[in-house]
Image (cartoon, rainbow, N blue to C red; front, side, top):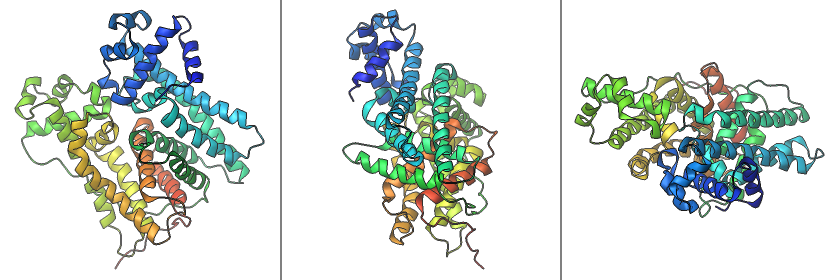
Length: 429
């Protein structure tokens, strides 16, 4: 990915107190490597090689690795916000509010996927860095979120829709769907315009669709427990899941796991051959927890439930197991894009099964004429998963999960189906 001339000019302003050429090369290199390898895989020696400087020379411009990362992540979010703002300003106020909202969708996707390593780095590493490193990025995101809220409110007013507090949750889910594309979009496989068209359909109808009550789904089943083994092994697994959920892969250290599990760090190797073997086991358990809970939710539906009921039930099950029931499940959603390739490969089979749970009802909906025209089930599934997977990055316990579930079901029900459900599925005898 080539950094644009406009973006380089912005970087020069950020580092104007330093010799711009070298500092810019260092930032470019760090952004590219963060986007490709993640925070845990970033090495100063690799940045120096890519920037054609000596490793020690980097510290003339940046006091530490963390300061360098912090500046890249801040710049990625700040420049994304400015790019969308500048595009909307250039479009002019005469553009209808709904079209301005959809223009923001397109500019977000094009900027993160085609233009800026910085924005990809900012999105992909948001959940992996410490709160201190992320603080300036968070401030920029708050301003960016407000931009989206203003756009949605203006579009709703233009369409004569009543104010809706949960539309704010819909905005966060929408940004998650857009951000999630960095994990799955590949230019050789998916046409970007097709992805943009899908996202615009989801936003236009999901955020601004007719109000209605989301379909009720079955009460969530209890999450599966880890396989019975030794008590110590189970404590180590639970401690690792909690650490991955709280700190991410790059900061998941055996010393902290041992402290949480009340064991000596060397004792971990009695049960697991390596740190990555332990993390692979935890993420595998998380995948199975998610899959088990989602299958239970679908099996609890009556036989005459249609694909719209299935999507609503899957949405609720996914969010509840992710936020309420299982550190193992949250560890998966927060770290799947950050772990090394060997771990991702080990998780692929179960991951494909999870994707199939979503793909089947979307394919059925398309075949039955229930899916909104123009939506491809595969691309739609990835946007849905992006919206749900991004939730742990912004959700706070002050937001009741029940309310979030209804907001997500409303967004997806209106966004995916021309005739969303407004009542619970009929119950069998």
